[in-house]
Amino acid sequence: MIEADSPLTRLVGRELAAPAPESALALARAIREERGDLSSILFYGSCLRRKSDEGIFDFYVLVDRYRDTYQKTWLAVGNAILPPNVFYIETEHAGVTLRAKYAVLSVADFEAAVQPRCIHPYIWARFAQPSVVVYARDDDARAAAARCGAQAIVTLIQRLMVFLPASQRSQRFSLSALWQRAFAMTYGAERRAESDDHISGIYDSAPERYDEAAVHAFEELKRVGWIERASARGGGQAYEIEMSPMRRGWMRWRWQLSRPVARTLAIMRLLKTAFTFGDWVTYAIFKLERHTGEPIELTPRQRRHPLIFGWPVIWRVYLRR
Image (cartoon, rainbow, N blue to C red; front, top):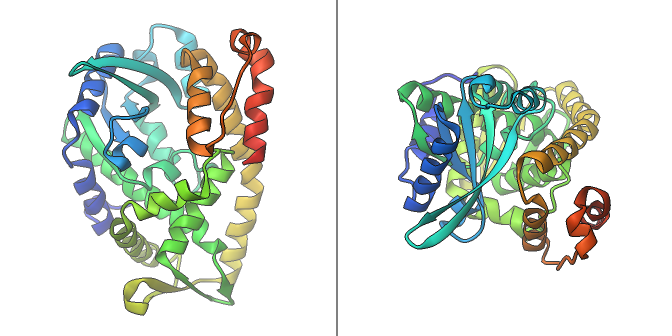
C-alpha cells in the first residue's frame, strides 16, 4: 500500500475532504439509518463530477465486517464471496426525491481490491477518479480511504500505461491519452455501455487533477523500481517513461488473460444485483439509455419476468457497444 504521507495520498486526502452537497449528505444519512454502524461512505461518479442532483447518486459504503452489516446470512455470504453487494435507496430532501445506489464493501476487501495484484479493475478503476467522504467514523477511516484512493491511481497507471505506443524501453504519450485509454479499457473489461464522449468527458472534467495525479503516480512507480525514468515533455503535458520491455510485455499479457475473468465477474455481479437492488430492470434501462443514447422498450412480459425474457434485450445493447 502506498505511504500515508506521499504526495499522491495527500492529493486524494484533500479531494476526500472537499465539502459535499446537501443532497449527498441527506442520502448518506438515509444509508446510515438503513445499515447502522459504518466505517465510511464515499460519494463518487457522474453526479459528483457534474455537480448535479439529476440522475442516480453513487456511493461506496465501507464496513468492518459483513456479518455485522446484515440481518440475513445470505447477504453477508454473497458480499464476502463476490463483493460488493449493491442496493438502491430513495429519500426526500427539500421537497425532492433523491435516488442513489450504494455498494457495500469491507475495508479489508477495499484495500485488497485497489492493489496491482487484483485481476479485475472493478474498484481501482472507479477510485482512480475523484470521490468525497460524506461520512467517516473517525480520522483512521478517512486516512484509510485516502490511502486506498491513492493506491487505486497507481494501480490503474501501472496496469494500463503499458498499452500506449512503445519503442524498446521507452514510451512517449500525452497524459490525456494515458487516462482516456485507461478508462476505455476498464469500461470495456466490464462490458459497460459507455459512449466515447462519456469516457473522454471524465478526463475533461478535471484535467489538471488527473495530470497531477499521474505525475505523482510516476514518482511512486519510480520509487519502488517499477519504472526506470519518468521525464516531462512539452511543458508537462506529455511524458517519456522508461521501463523493462519484458515487464511491459508481461503486463500486456496479464491484462489479456484477466480480461475474460473481469467480464465474467461483472456479469455475475449484475446477476447478484438483481436480488439485492429492487427494481433493477428500470434502473438498468435508465443507465443504458442515458449512456448509449438509444431508447429501449420492454414488453410487459419482459418487465414481469426480466431474468427470463428481459436479458436478450439488454444483452443486445451491450454487444452493440
